[in-house]
Length: 80
Image (cartoon, rainbow, N blue to C red; front, side, top):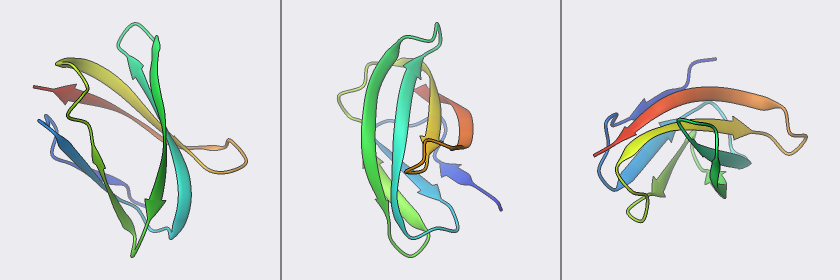
């Protein structure tokens, strides 16, 4: 199963493409592993778009979890 996040680096919006329809949970951490936010995201037709305009510039770790808290993916993200 392939997961694609675009763009990276990003400014205000992040789109994630993943073969899934339904609710998943996006955990956002700073590069020193401090939790920034938990966002409930809905995948429709295998993708979702998340507005991150309130997120300050920096390097973040994104982790996507299912309802059972199983980690689906983990990626680095640069916000410019």
